[in-house]
Image (cartoon, rainbow, N blue to C red):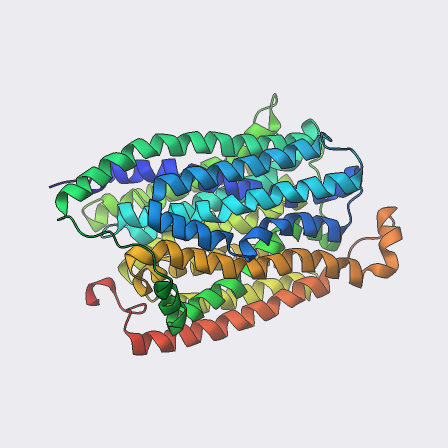
Length: 513
């Protein structure tokens, strides 16, 4: 009996509906990095205050909220878990917005406290929503283009990050800084509506899948399953790799625009005579540029895979590539201005991810070599942070930012499908949530730690920085992230060794396992 998942159109439509929450939550997670200097000026925050607010996203997850969400996901399913934690993320983003407009008090201490509480609520929903999306993709794409679908879902998230960083200053300068917070909260509300639409299809496919299988006794969660999970060396290595690698990426994203302004002399806002795509609404016009780039990626990676012959695939890819070159040439003046602006240039990091994650996902679907690709990605991470910390060359900084984007498309595209090979499908919710919980410990420490270290190494000139007479030195904080890359390479090698013994097939072509 054919089900909805057997239809190519339905599979990819479901991915779009699911990816709305991924896009919106990643926007809300990272957009503050684009307006760090505005927040510090308007609200009287320090770098440590900024890092604390951003880092509070991880606090409830550190004590097991994601594991609770994963258990709820495994026990009660995608629908209940998605609605509960999607609503929690929306509530948290709304509290942050209300704090930003001074509803709870206009002094910096009250704003800091209430924005932190809102970020805690938002973070409680954020990570579980990501687990729900990943688990749902397995449901619809297992046996089909699973790595590519996961790669595109990650790509939607990185598009949210890129747009959040690049566009939030446009929204803030066009109105007030609180408008950026209100827009982020509205996006999550819209994405939650998209998820509700998805639920109608989820009910239908569950009925179809149940009709195809004989009735079985319900396999409830047991604590012994969790203990068995954390005894698996392959799972331990991939979890620790996730922590080390993500700690060198997500916290850095929050500080990258400010670093480019301080270290390399980029502008914090676009000049008055900058080219605009839509004169009536520059923020919307700039956002459409990024969306256009993402559409090229989808056509390049998804459409050819559904064509029958190699010649057809080659012709389509060449046509898309030609269109992409024309697109870049047409907006060359706009891109020229963007490359001297901190937030817009920092968006090159997730932009690299948008371009390459679906491509790497398609490669992994066909060739695999997941552990090897994680090693390569970790090596690129080291090169990227070295170019941004030790060196002071602007050209090498561009290369570093783009390399970081490639690294963070390569490693997740290999990592998340690998987990589905290591862990039984009925325990994937618990497995992914366990990984996200441990990851949040690393993120929480580094979100706050970079801001704290930034204030410490610049302590002698903080007053001058506040007066605009000096700039932050980011060398030491970014150099610390190089160590994360070294640890990531070590763990990727250990994962490769463990896979040889366990035989999960992380390195073998799909046909061989």
